[in-house]
Length: 458
Image (cartoon, rainbow, N blue to C red; front, side, top):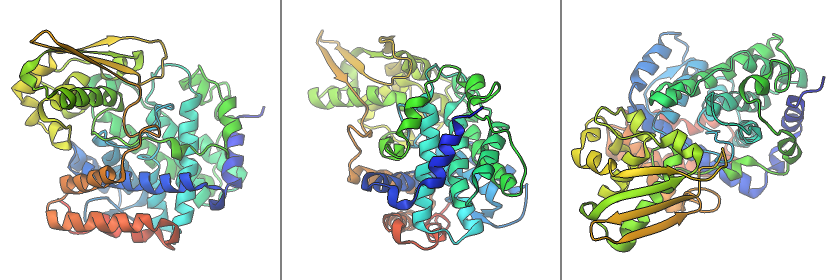
């Protein structure tokens, strides 16, 4: 039986850097820089030290850098830590139609492989990342049901194998083996999301590490099943039984999904972003202070209610709060912004923010099971006035891209958050931006690592 994974394999094997249109090349640079930045910020995320210490205990080979730390680990261990850090703050980019974070668990193993095996050119890395995103987001886009398993990690595992397979120059048979070995390791549950646990980022870390193992074994001749996506016990029957693959397969090579990815302006679940944007706009347009707010209602699609409809409470963990729209909305109304510091343990005890969050209610509307927008905000004031606003799409996406100045502000904020030395963090952020901008001319991607590995780390 033919399996859809063969169409993905052909796309990977036949694609060259020259096939990437200008928009895709620019998006690779933009989202590589964004992911490296949030990975450095994740150095300070809860439990990141425990993750790093556990990974470091597994071997002494200094093959690849851990972002934001003066530390090198075996490639698989470095990919594991870096992917955890890249997702831990919920600041990583997302393909909204796929409901997949397609870079935070794919770029770490690609760079770790490039460090271990190098030299790998910037063009080779760019193509590998674009292919990784095509597969990860393509699998997510083909899914038509609600989330039961943690799709960002599961789809990214296959995406990482795609990109690594291109860098490793695997044959078609080896690439199919690699995908089969990814299937053998696929896992991940939405229970971590339900409980607001850092296990979500751990699952991304596991996907990054598993992809390297799958490709290393495939190169060594270890076989994997080839009916990976549609076989009786393949990925879709087991994990995403409602799917429509054909439109995705027909678009390969014509649509490069890296150009459809969205930046996150705020370090919280993407499902919170339209609501945050609406509250900030109303606050600014009408000069509203938190004391004037009697209550707020946000009408959201079913998926948003599932992902971020939880109540704010006094015992919130940072991971829980990042996925709580009432908390994120209260912070936006109080402070006029939502930043990394708003999810630190001490900040979560802010009585004024908690009190305001309890006056923000979500109402479910719409029927699209995969939609994150539109969202409708109604802000009721003590005076009796009601201000409403419809947000068709959250900022940062292809329809409303994040301005370059805002991207650079995010880059520097991430480096400052993950660093001990502010001046050095500014210099490292600037150096990284310059090197990523010249990605197409870089002959050895190990040049990208120096600004991530210097002495400014905490």
